[in-house]
Length: 336
Image (cartoon, rainbow, N blue to C red; front, side):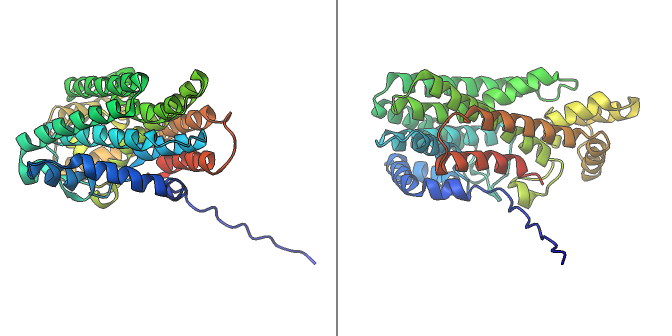
């Protein structure tokens, strides 16, 4: 008798294992966030709360908590630091939406559309200030150095991106330096600080930093690919935002480099703001698909994801390590 085996499909990777892993710690972090968002000026918690409660995954603070569990840390300093990480991230989002003129984030109207640009910028500044107070509360000069350094790098990355907007032919190396600064730096710092408060050897600090940095690069590469393959409901922002803002993301860089003369002329006009209609965006999607620019962007994301997983191979197996590996797989799989 012949037995035919049925292979069960592997479930799609998810953040659920990490969410379950850090659930109790995250409750403590959320309490810190609520406490430190308070102000006698009602607009501050109202505006900040709009974004913080807006459905984000809280991936960066979860990485701090998961890294601490990976190391067997038994203290509570990571709660304060995870809140600081979330405040830094939220502040940068508030500022980014003003710079980009965005009107949608995570499927909701952005704070700058509701309350205006000045209020968004100033509340972002408030959250940055709160994050530094939390770093001081943690009582570690090294942690303060890592997170303050990351904050400066993020700002540099945003300025670098701003000066690269509408520059057709942007080198791929500069694009990678931009996303390493504006996205990966905070992922890297969020993971490394767990090893600092756990008083682990520097080799473990660097391993977690490498995990976070490579995960952050993979995460941003997929974000940039998603702009050309998903709708607003999937992305939580308007489809084609990057295209209309003239951002030279990797799909555009590759499509431009591989295009013929007519296609390059289209990309030049689009990047410089002369082709921004829905029909133009549809044509851009066709070109990135024809040139396999999105496929190759996703392939590079998988490469960096593999580097992230490899960085934590040396840590003991267990729920924390498994959840962190699946978080990488989830970050890369979001575009499929």
